[in-house]
Figure 1 (spheres, one colour):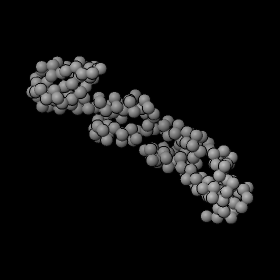
Figure 2: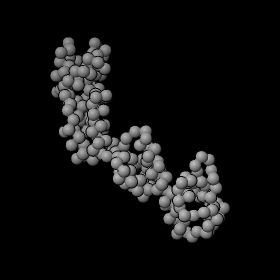
Figure 3: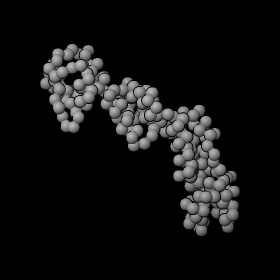
Length: 206
């Protein structure tokens, strides 16, 4: 088989085998591959080259994903696997991890702090979101135990701010109660924080 390379747009090189297009790589990779256009290549050599290209493409995709926002290991792996397959995804994640670009403990703590401060989540909702994102249960529990969160005070802040306008009607108070439950706060803590509002026990006896 004859391998040929043709320059594409920007930094791209298009690789063909016996005149049939097969792969696209970046120029840096191509010129470091040891091949030149017109070389003869057997099937095993081609497969080895194709595997290396797939891993490089997946690694570059991982860097691009992380440039937009941080991810945990499992979350990143799942995104990469859908596009590049298990082997390339695993290789990319291991390389990214070795470089220190992902760290599940750091990610979990940062996310937990953000969910608590910016979105008003309670402990249970934070833990659920950490697990949903791919953080293992042990790391999630360690993270939860490491953050300081006054849930009763958080509820009061939400009642005085985000939900204040809804507390003037029976329907609104019920909606607020349900919303606070979804945010991960306990039934008893919500009742306690809302007990100062007129007729609360009557309208929120649920």
